[in-house]
Length: 284
View 1 (cartoon, rainbow, N blue to C red):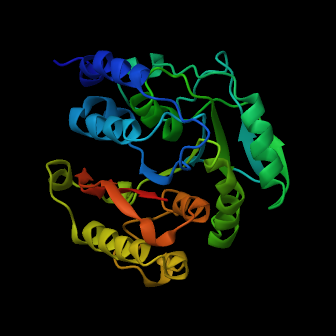
View 2 (view 1 turned 30 degrees about the vertical axis):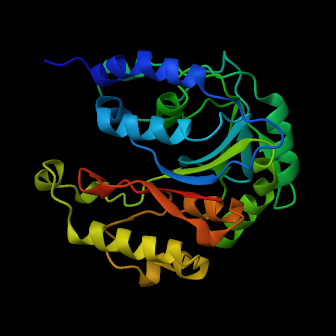
């Protein structure tokens, strides 16, 4: 039987070399992009191809001076932020997986200063509170692949609502940080119909509801049509199967708000896992 995360064990040495050799963002560089990431659960560590794609994405740009990430797995109001220190740890907010996943760590540098900047910006949208919380798996799992040296300060921000206008406004307040080398990430999953996964999907079949929603969403993203995207519950094909709850789609609105050019969207990662679209996009 293959050891859990064996693919990550094979991936990590070369990834560490690539990450440590990556040029750091410097003043005068272009702003880093705003991205929407289909983040994957712990089995991401068993998917060599997906990890290679994420690392290639992260190393295609300068290494950020900081990362601000909004994850599907932290829904709380008012707007909450956490600025973990290397002793804060991570949140194992998943169940039923191999015990190895519950021993994996991601100790990032102190992010107190970045957290204060984020709080100051987001206070224009609503009340902001600090919470002593580690990074959840929507943050630490993909970041452990993208920045395996854990050498970038990370601030996680909660989803205080599923209202697109509020989330877009949050992204707009974070936009200026991109010009300081901060990478803004909305972390979700383009389709997330977990209750409807079948054995055929596990074996590679992509159901129509997932395929149709993904195509609809990508067309609207390319058009910069935030209003249509905000109406996904009412107008998108493949609902409610693609998103029986909203939290894996709504981080996209933070990404769109943080973008300077809605016409610049490009797909960086596509394909499916268990029939669910793992489309991940980047905007300037």
